[in-house]
Length: 172
Image (cartoon, rainbow, N blue to C red; front, side, top):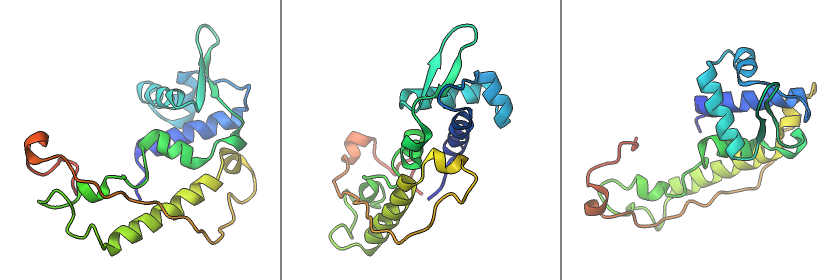
């Protein structure tokens, strides 16, 4: 799993707002200054967070952004998926199928099982960790055995004629 800059900085902005409390408000310029980010980038981050219901905006003189809910009610899985989408793309098996419409291992794939299990661990850990945990003075979270698994769906991808043919730009 890779954490993108958007996810990292978006989470940092939320932590900063959580420290301000549910009534605390920061302008985009104040947030940018506190986090060492540009004003346009901070504006983009806060817009994404607002569209996903994690922050609210108040317009006008003295306006700004504040956290939408109590930090105890916002878990990191919600934050990371709001900023970057699912941990493991549900279409992973069709996006990385080589030159075929479906992966040759679609019916019995050990990699599929490992990635789904890993995504489950990450999802469960992030779901148990809240913004309140990140702003507390104690340990963030105690590691416990996890039991989740995320299912990766196998579905045929569009034919080469429909998708323009060739490999996708985001294939690794």
